[in-house]
Length: 378
Image 1: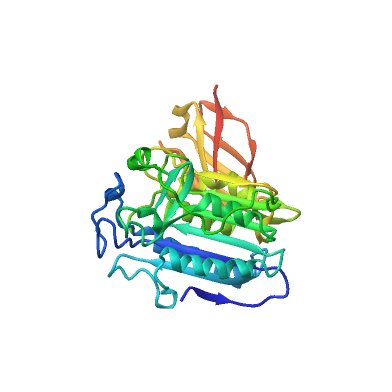
Image 2: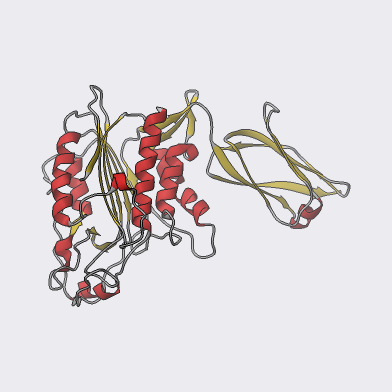
């Protein structure tokens, strides 16, 4: 089973293709590992996050559809996921056929036909699993490495597939790819040929409304905390749920451009651990709305004082322009981090003596808003 949701709509609708591959049986730690020949393949092993992430993304689409926040009604969902045997991460109702290349290719063809049933449809493609980049980005299906002499028979060329889809009569397209983009050492000595699921036609024009989001920049990895949804997928879920929204004509709208502009901030909110900042890659042509909300969602505000030594004696205040929302904090050594709905606020600091300060208006709109209150010694 791959088609798990299918409704017919007269109006344009969303047709989603979701893949989350955690089990690679022919690789290290798999059920039937093979002796891999190509340098670097032997170090690719099993994953925990992809099935969790795919289920999380699917549930988000269902919830947004049920709440009426999607800009298009949900028409169909093709779903593939695999997990390390015994993990029990995939609900029974989402159990699917093996996500090998053949099964994915057959379901992909059926998905494309549904997407083309109305030229105004929105095609949504989501993949979480192993990825490799050598010029183009290759996504590994569960049968990767089944034939060690030709491991990439279990994969497909995502970039070429995306280019081909862009040339079909599907006006709205969005792609989420949560996969690493490193090159294998063996590919430097023996370049591999990786076929797309659909071949592009260089004579055709691209879709007018297209957005591509990748959870890793070139030559970077995609990451997750063990046993959790990945940082990238959490960011996408939170963004669609309003964290990437912007006030537009009286409503809060998450568009493809808003999501792109806020993606890395959302990823690094979820990261919340030491180390390098997570980097993504994104592209969009003409922006279009994905979800719409009547009310703003919460954003993160990080408030501090300048000079730093004013902070331990400062009473901090953040009040919205209508005076309804009032946040306060007493003197502490650390910066003040809190959540509040997006909107316009006035911030200030008061002291028992020694400093004065000026009120300042701020626009809390981004996922993370870092603000400083400038304090003058009297």
